[in-house]
Image (tube, rainbow, N blue to C red; front, side, top):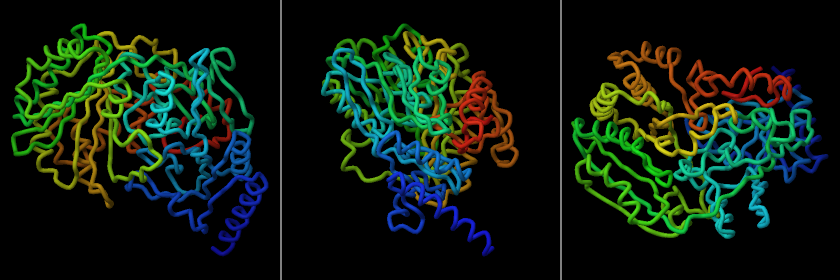
Length: 497
């Protein structure tokens, strides 16, 4: 044990010396700032990196990567630190973290409307910065999420049906490879790697993205409707929604349907929220056919405003993130994506609502929700992109469903896992064995035949390669072999050679 400790001490000393020589500010476990820097977003995980670096430019990122590689230390980047499974800290002990918080600039060339945005930028700050130029890109609605991980794996938001995913607007990217070299990839320069970084990661550390931007709409309508309804009524919300979104709705409508534990047994609480970027009269004309199929809402919030006012209303947290305290939670999440050509059957929807009422109502150790995000439907820009144009494998999807259960603070209860596994099971198998957690977990881990969304990662899946990357995985493995043959960029759910 003493010899092992000595080797570790020698390695840490060597690592510190290399990083100090490159003027790369670094926190090691014995440093006073390390505990705060190593805090996880999801309290289910306790992860201890070997060190956390804070480079200020691409050259220092290169130094950090080479310092880790020479000792065969896994290297990971952290942009916003919002990984559901602590991948920004490596996902497991012993990684060298390259924190990208110093990479937080947004610049726009007004002659081309191309923006250079660094991966440490938070989504709220990006929206504010581009708004000053009358421009925008599509992205999610949690203001403190960092661009790096968000853009790498898709990144849906309420304007994605109109403009596409964040990664669909990437024109080029500068990244540092495993050998320390700095390169820029685009459709003209190393197009295969450019394909790979739009939908995947673990080939290098991106230090900046170049985006095509979009002129902001003149006005928007933010809406929230809330109901407490019976289980039978709850099924109508989803069956009607599937019909409504394929009835010719404009791309300017973005929405999600959220299901919660009911206020009493036999009920579910439901929320419909989103935005419409057009006139208020046009919004009313668009949404009313769906609302006509539902009971009157118990609470309605509708607000009109300009672009940035509507974005602010949609966003979790203030758009200016500089004064926001770090956000933490303790949770488990899963996702599944519903194909556009094979929507959920009425039987599956009825089974889901019944399960949420019975098991969901009795599951009191966690607060849960099922979030049904509209990806496809009529005129969706997401689904206009050919599936092989980027590494993001999930075009032609109707919904992305996020299943989320939080205990707020650790320890995380076993009921949270069992409950969400059961949601999967009821949606796709009509199983009746949720009382048997081991058997249920085996089915959920091994036998899924759907697809899932990488920005809601689940570290309990055994067949994640197919679920997250589908037919693209073999092509991504070839990129991994070419650009990171020693597997320096290694973390849970990273591409494996």
